[in-house]
Image (cartoon, rainbow, N blue to C red):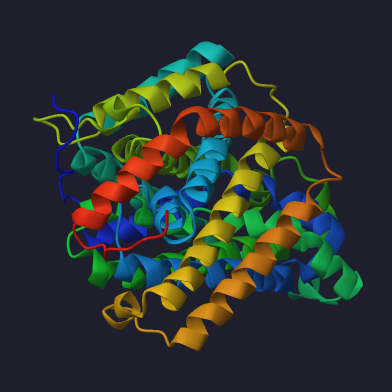
Length: 452
């Protein structure tokens, strides 16, 4: 088990789409519709359309970067190389907390759904669930991607069945007036609904493991964004059309309540099965991305080099996978407040989007030769425009969450202080050594002369 090695290319364009849909269409669809309907009323559907705009901007930037420099651990690697090593380090450092929180909130919600059918102890069941996905990811990217593909297929078919059977129970009057709460209600729902689309870009985090990544990443991201948006719109339209905005806003389990109207006793197994498949895909996708940015940081030397070890038989970053699993176990000690956990996840995610938009802007400014070889071609001014727009969206969304719960901001600020101290003691020195090595022999597919 060497301290380096090549990650195996086992991911296809189907898996790219499955990772994007798997990461984005998860817990939020079961928890966000009620509060969104409360503030937007029938304007919920219009708010859903508007909410996809920021994620579409981020997806375009990721598609450009992925078709130019596909890298595993891309959200660390790109800002570290194109902006500054400290920026890449700090974003990834904060994402350790964010991804840990994401794994906990997803496993918590999944177990809470399963407990409606079978009495289960909460924390031991969460542990068993995390252990299961750890093993999927340990034994090969094809295993993890295969699990993701199956679970995504199951949940898409289940959502399609929900929509097909529910259309007959939809009442047209439940959609009017669209702006019952005014445009203010539509925009008030946006901070909630934007979280629906987070994770679309997940496949870029395993860029080196995608077959012909420069050609398929952009296509896969476009398909994943479209499929996720259509799924959200169709499912939300049926739930709103069946229940009406007041009942939807008051519901603790909107899809289950809507399903009870037209499915009767079959609603519970269908909705619970869909929830388990949907949340399971998100857990699996986050495990993969968490592992890859730890791997990338170990490969660059800003974290212990053992994290870059690749198992000679399975072709997976087994040490990084084990560390990600260990972090998830520590996460079992976090508070169970969903608002707290959602913010702990969303803040580092927005910082990740911001830094990668910044990376795209720096790439076209300092490395025009890389833009010229991109398979997803955008003009220099277009890349800059998409990047600046993405940065603005990320800052607005980060600021919007302060009033909901300040504690995640405080915890992440404290963790940032610890990371800065670590960087000053070790990370800065190792990143300088890395830059000196790459000036002589840059990594495959990456140009010389990245800023140190």
